[in-house]
Structures are given as structure tokens and as C-alpha cells.
Image 1: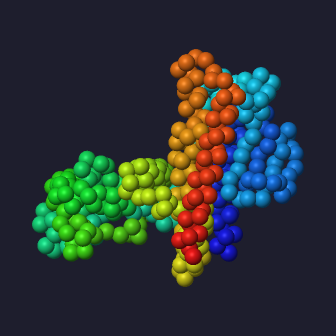
Image 2: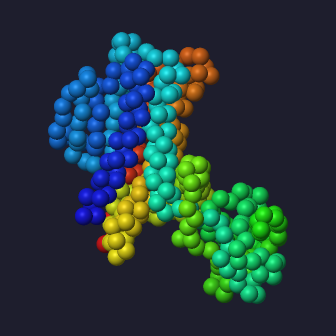
Length: 349
């Protein structure tokens, strides 16, 4: 069952991403040769509206193959390459943008059903900096070191990502609101006795508050913002050595996480299975949007980089050269995926 659920989640997210490319391509008069779910040999397909719709053997991706995007038939009518640069930018950017739209829609469902985790202090620990500075249960945290806070998860994450800063004795400036009045305190984190530095603030991401329609719309944006920022922070840790490639998870690892979450959620009933699967879909959709915008050949971000260079130069880069670079980038990405998949399998054994 865990594999089936994972495939359904992956497929839904990928279809939505590729549909973004498809919709903008058709609106721009570009011929879409094939819209496929999966990779590898075709399992089944049919043709409608001039497009071949296919399901392929490996449920690890998808594609929206447009005429002229691979360096061939660049001047043909309906070719991707024959369109103005700004049109091509919209078509390429549509995939990641649709991922963010999907994450927003799913967030709206979650928040409408479950509410949002406001950054409210539920308790302060005696003898720790928060209590000594006068923070109290019921205070709403509004900022940390000048960074606006909207969700309690952001408070927990700030502590997680800044342990080196905490351990170095650097003060942490907490902005808060109490009974409509705003205040600010400066705290120096202390060792909790376990090697982790804390402020003595306690909250709960499950302490949820229901919102009206406008609140749902606003906090859905903030939810997507949270996952986008979390993805960038994870990439920053990878670049700075905070985490290694061995700690990255690929499709196999994600399937395992989805399966474990499903099994745990079943104890609480179908509603919580639904909520947790939706949360995972939000994370994956936002993550896919960010990763596809990285300026790496073969990804949407790599194609956008070429288009930006074209706009600056006012001259197109040779389509065949660009196609070769994207093919090389795709091969390197496949090598990286195999490496990550191997690590996932090794961790599970």
C-alpha cells in the first residue's frame, strides 16, 4: 500500500507540473508532441488534439515534449524555438509556478480543515533565559533576530538551524506581542544539559487555530513560503557541509517516509491519514518547484538561465549547443539520482 500511495502522490505532483508547461505551450501556439507520465518505455498511449498522451514504465518523472525544444525543427510552425524569448520564459517557468500553486491549494485544504500553528508560547521553563527575561505563556512571538515569524514551526526551525550561533553565546532578539502590546527581549541561549542550546520556550505545532476565508488564503501563502524557505535552508546546509550527500533522500527514501507516515497515521483514523499525506504532497510540490528552478542544465532553471542570457545578449545561443548541454546535464542528474537511490537502499537494509 505504501508504494501505491507514494506513486499516486508523485504522479499527481508531476502531472500538475507538466500541465503548467502544457497549458502555457498551447496558449502560446506551441505544438506539444507528447505529454507523458513516467520515464522509459511506453506502457500505453493515445493521441488526441495533436498530442500523444503516454504512461511509461518508470514512475519517476514525466515530460511535456514540445516541437523544437531539442534543437531540431527550430523554425517550423508551432515550434517552441520560434517563439519570442519572453513566451519561452513563461512556458518554462510555468511548471515550477504550477508546483507552488498546487502547494497553495493543498495548504488551503489543510488549513481549512485543521487550522494554523500560531507562534504562541505555551510555557516557559523556570531558570532559563525566556523566563528570566519576563516572557510568559500566551505571548505571541512575532520575530527572531529581525526575521518575521508567522508559524510556530519557524520558531522550532530557527533553534534547529542556529545551534552554532546559540552555542557561540550570541544573543537572540525575540519580538513578541502580549494583549495587543508589542515588546522585545534579548536572550542568550544556554545548554540544556544535552549539548543543545535553548531559550526555554515551549510551544506545539499541533496547537492549531481556525481561520476564516481570508485567513486561509493568507496562511496558505505563508505555508508555501515556509516550505520554500525550508528547501533553500536544506540546500544551504548541503553546500556548507552541514549535511552530506549521504543524508539526502531520493524516491526510495521518500517512499519509505510516506509508508511510515501512513502506518502511523492509520492509528488515528482516515482523516489523519488524509491530512498527513496532503502535508507530504505540499512539501514535495514546493520542493520540486524550488529544485526545478535551480540553474542546472536539463532543469527548468537551466533553460531559464539560457533564456535570460539570450535576452541580455539579444542573440540566441545555438540551439544544438544548448541541447547538448542539457543532455549532458540530464546524464549527470541521472548519475546523482542513482547515487542517492543507492544510499536510500543501503540505509533501509
